[in-house]
Image 1 (spheres, rainbow, N blue to C red):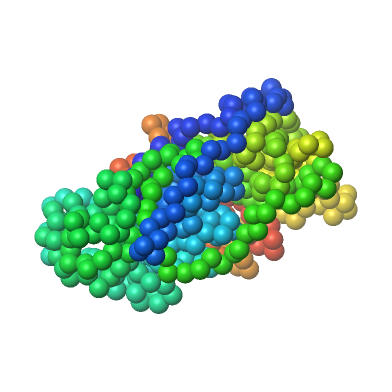
Image 2: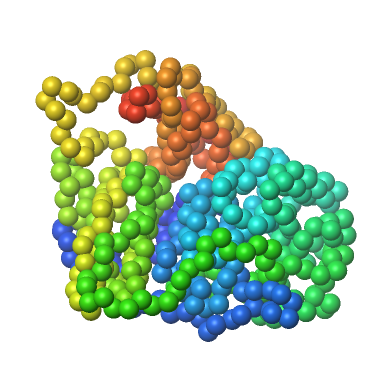
Amino acid sequence: MRKLATTMVLALGVAALGACSASPDGFDDATNEAPLTPAPVFNGDPANQATFGVDISFWETPVSQAEMDCFWASGVRHVVVGTQDEGITREQLAMAVSRGMTVDAYVYLYWTTDLAAQVNEAFRRVKGLPIARMWLDIEQDPGSIGSKTIVADIQQAVTTCQANGSVQCGIYTGPGFWKSYIGNTTSFNDVPLWYATYNYRTSLSDWPTEHFGGWTKPVGKQWATKPLCGIGGVDWDTIQVSAKPTVNVDRTVPPDTGTVPPAPTGLYPLDGDVEHYGYVKMMSQMIPLATSYQIGLERWNGKAWTPYYTWTNANAFVKNSLVDNSLYHFHVRAQNAHGWGAWSDWSSFDYGTYTGARPSSAPPPSNNPPPVPPAASVPTALTPDGNVLVTTSPVTLSCSGVTSATSYEFAIESQSGSSYIPYYTYAPTAASQTFYPAIHGVGYRWRVRAKVSGVLGAWSPYATFQLK
């Protein structure tokens, strides 16, 4: 797995763009993009009751229906998702489940951070989603940490995972780590094993020549990393699955009704989302018998929506960079042999930290102006603040509670040169938020606002801290 998150924001900021780059000059049609091409079908390892699975993480970005259905057409029936980024984690898991896959999750373990806290946070991020296993991803170079400490840390992670009680817990690792750093210990051979050996040998029957750590047999093997269905960096696995799909998808092609397609639904980003990376991936559901889709984007200029760009392709999604700290909305329509169907509803999203005037869905009555939050609704007593040095992760941000507040927004920015760039915005119900900063050795600033009676109040002044 390539699961390190330490350069997440910078890496995603230069992610590959979609069909065409954005243009603020108005709607233009991008060149029609060909449908995604599945890989030759691989059915796993039936002799060992193992299926074809893939594992992905935030590096692979949110996954569209077109991409997930292409996975299915390649033989994939199981998807394992990393828990590094909550928003992407939940989108990837939900998409996989909705397209008939079974799912697991994994948590990449860092030796210098509280192991129990990492595992518990991973479970929180996947709460409500039907994962069958939580895998403890054990591969980070421990540096000078001794083998006894590592073994104790692994045991703490296993114990914490099992204490959650909701799913089976397993270990993901490779023979190189296991033999080099913990002396090929047999202390965990009662925990299910998923191991990595990149030799393109896809059967679990190869275990007698690849064995380590005292396990009598593995649950899964990761045998390659290569693109699949246009997504780079996908890990290919042969894995035994301990659950059944919670959604059964009817993939029968329906009869042609002789009408244009209905308006697509299932738009992502969801209406009101905040996109905090250097790209956005806009998508919708696929419509049976549709051959093309248009994704129309508009940008808010502070007074009105203005046309920005229209993409046309066969896959109902596009990934692109936009103008930072702006407000956008988009809609989608589909075409079949009978013409273009109706546009979907609009879905709006913040791209970065947008602080300007916002549109309203309808002008308020002249005698009923929009509610103005009282000054007392601005949170105070932000901590950490004062450019203090934080040396351990996670970091807990907190502020004074606001009377009658139902939720808060914590907007975090990380330092880049002499300025700050958007990092992430959380929306907890309490006046505190814990997170794991992905970029170390830089400064952060953050602010918070409260929602009272359905109205977001003014932002607090910025607070600052340094992360070692």
